[in-house]
Amino acid sequence: MQIYIFKLNSLLSSFLKIILVLQLNLQGHPGCPNKYNIYHDCSKQCQELWGAGHSEPSSSYLRKKAKMLAKYPLPDNWKEVYDPGL
Image (cartoon, rainbow, N blue to C red; front, top):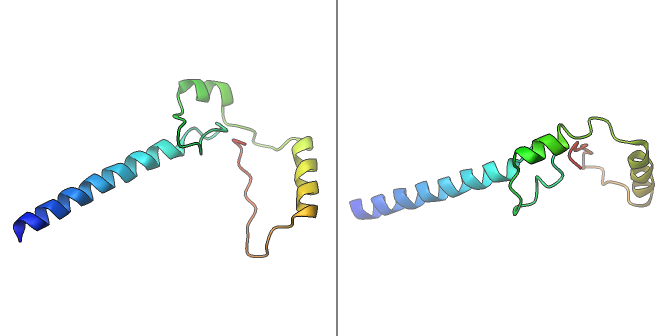
């Protein structure tokens, strides 16, 4: 019984370590447009190049967004969230 518990605890701790590593890798730098790419590791260059991202969307972005939403409206239960890194 103790062997099985030890193996289970060992597997759970390994699994939790993997989850933590993946979570840290997926967070990325806030302004980096590649932060959601699982094969991209944000570095100091991302911070220097992208900074905090675009805090306000550009006028061309807003025009394109309005055109897209007119053609493909969001479902009622969806919430629109602006991502400064895109």
